[in-house]
Structures are given as structure tokens and as C-alpha cells.
Length: 542
Image 1: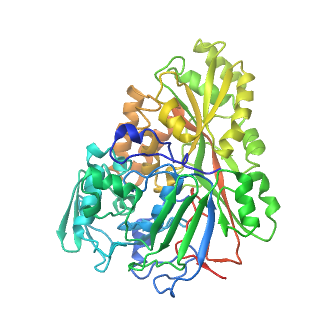
Image 2 (image 1 turned 90 degrees about the horizontal axis):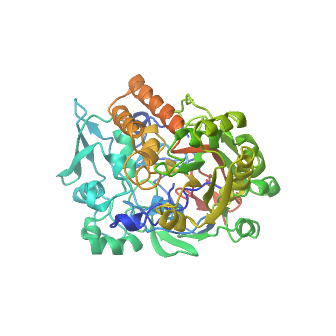
Image 3 (image 1 turned 60 degrees about the vertical axis):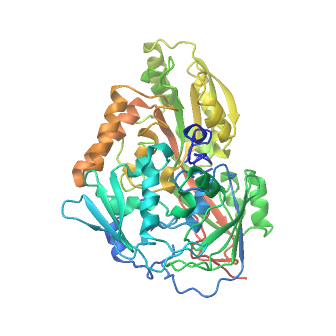
């Protein structure tokens, strides 16, 4: 259930190492309205209660995440489910998005970003008392560096495509940063939340950055004490923190387990106060003793093809495999109803949602016709899947559906690191079923579309999608980024229609995320619509 495919990056320094790791990975937010209501001391938690005046932190929160740590923590490239959740606690951006409500709030920024009349220059004033957890002050140089290093092509940064509209960033005063844009970008204030601020002194060279990846230092309310690829992470409150969301507990122990029964036992036995990815079949069995949050999410089950290899270089074959799936049957059988069939790239709960011109309703006859027209008779291939729980539950149902149209698929399930590190890059790769959730970074259509359909990582290196349609998608995304209002909406609709028709990678369904917690032990905890467990503004009751 709900993941970013657990892990998306590797080394922040090496493109090949980056590809070792798996892919990750609501309503869009009006940034101007949200920021107008908040200041550096006026932010609220997900329940709307004011933060910044917390009592001395007390107690320990123990929780169990559903995925293993499979990447480092350098926010320029971190994307594993565990690392990105931890990073939300230990780092700050200029503007942050609440991981639960998805509303923006001022973090390191002392006031709203200010644009020039032509929209090509933005200035941001920093909180003047911000310090990193090692006591070093957060400077304008640190902020400018955090953006500059991400934009540097040598770093092949995961987040680079999200801020490609930025031309340069410079410190323009002791506590002020100036951004020069290549073209106006109306989503500027919300989008800069993807860049967490790091100390330049700790990341200025490849050697320093490599060490920082495993021993991060941020300015957030918590600091990382320890981490393990198999057991999880431990965070403690950052006594140096001066921002609007101070820690309410002294420690967070984030255990990790991919075993559904183990996570449930942790919750029921009291070892954990919260768990993510509650197995759908077990939701009703939790009764009234626990708080269950189920939320419609972008998180999806997708099919991805090697579009350079016959017969999957013919979009009719890709379309046929979608039409052959009775998606509602998959949702009912594998997800106990906790999902919705994809009618567009975005989930229907997203404020930017528009129904695609191609919707893959169950139509096995049409699937057979498309295969025949493409000359793909007696089609047989290996279906690679990640070992994510709901993906492995869905895969056999999908394979059975394909049998009904004369297609044979052999199942090959592996951990995500192996899938994206070894199997997908190989020439023999053909079809992947996996899950992804880039909404951990933001919920606007531009960001979510760019995750899969812009740049090299997914488009070139994984789905091998090229040609006029792919080039058109890139042009449309750039056009939409420069636009606003109806012009932007129209351009996004064209992208939704194009990727639905081409289906180089496309969702079968969007899931609901289900989180469970003990309301007698935690205060103000709420499950998120994205992967991860988040404890900003959350305290202990006992």
C-alpha cells in the first residue's frame, strides 16, 4: 500500500548510482492565500492549532513505517519513503507544505516571496535567528547554494526538473536571497518548497556531500541520531531550532517493516503508537480502539513499458493491456475497495484533475482488436513487479485478465532496488507494474507530471519513450509552466490526453492511504494522503 516505490535515488553525486534506486515515488494549494495567513510564528499544525509556543518536549513517539530505508538523506536526491519522511522533520525549506494538510507555511522565509513586476525576479527574506542543528547559523549563502547545487547538471539532482524555471540564485543581503527566472513561473512560491536548505560548509565538495548523505544536518525541529537500512531511524528534538514548529517530544523512533502482520502487531501490542499502510483487509478489524485515517491519494499502481522494444513500441499494444484489465475488480479484490480506477493521470481528488480523453474502461474485445491490428498475436513477456504489498496483490489479477485476451505474462517480483537498479536498465526488460507517489513533493499538476514525463530518469532511462509525442509532452509542460489561468489548464489537459493515449507509463488505479494510530497516546496526529508518517506538532499523552 501507498509508497513511492520505496526508494528513488542513490548517491547525490553519481547518475549511475542514482539509477540503482527505485522510483517514488489532494488538492492543489493557493500559495498566496495560504501564506498571507501565516508567519514565522503563526503556523498551525494539521488540526489548525497554533504552533511555535510549545512546552518543553517530553516523551517518545514510536511508529512503524511500511518500507525500508533504501536511499540517503541528502534532500537534493533523497526519495525513499523513509528518507523523505525523515527529511520533513530534520530539514526546512523557505516555504514548506504541511505533509498532512498540504497547506503552505513560512519555514525559513520570514515573509512571503516578493516578485518583480515582470515576474522574472523574486526576493525572499530569511528568518534571522535560524540555525542548523550543529549551531551554525543558516545564511543567505546556504540558501543560494542549496538551489545552485540542485541545478548543477553534474549532480544529476532528483529535484532539478522541479525548479528548471530558475536561472540563478544569489545572496542579496545578510538575510535575503534573490532568484532570477528564465521565464515567469506563477507557481514559484509553492514550488520552492521542494528544496530543503543544507549547510554549504557540509556539502561543498563531493566528499563532504557523500558524508552528509548519511549524516545530515538541517534546521528543522528534529535531528537524525541513527539510521539503519533494515530497522529504521531515530530522531531527537533539535534544541537549536527556532522556527514555527518546535518538537513536542524528545524522540521519534521510526521502525520499519514491510511485513503487514508485524506492523499490525506493533500497533495492537502498544509497541507503536502509529503505523502506515494498514492492510486493506484488516482495516475493519481494528475496531473502535484505534484512529484510522483513509485518504484518497495520488499514489498509483502503474504499468510502464520499454517503449523502444517491439511490440511495446506500438502504443496499440500498450493500450490493449490497459483495456484488458477490469480495474474495479482489481480494486475490490486486492484493495478491498480502497482505490479508484484511473480516469486521468491525476487522481480525481486533485484540484487540477481533468478527465483524460482516453479512459481505459474494461473492454477485452477492444483489447483483442488492438493486439490484432498491431500484429501482436500470442504475446508473451515477463511482468516485473516491485514487492510492495498492494502491487503483489494486484499483479496476479492483472495477469489473469491478460490471459483472457490471449496474453501470457510471467511474474517476476523483486525489491525495488533490484527492479530499478538491475532489471529495468537491462535490454531484456519489457513491462513493469509498480507504484509511485511524487505527491510527497507537491500536489500541483506541473510537478506531478514532470516527475514521470520530463527529463531523463524516467523518460529516457526507464520507459525509453522518444519521438514526436514525447517531444510534444515536453513542449506542453514548458508552455504550461509559463502560463496561468485557463491557458495553463488547457495545456495541462493536452498533456493528460497525450500521456493517456500514449501510455508509456500510466496509472491503472489510484489508491487510498490508510494510517492507524492510538488516539490515547498521541495528540494531534493525522495520517497523510501521501506515503510516510509525520509528527510535526504531534505530542505524547502518556
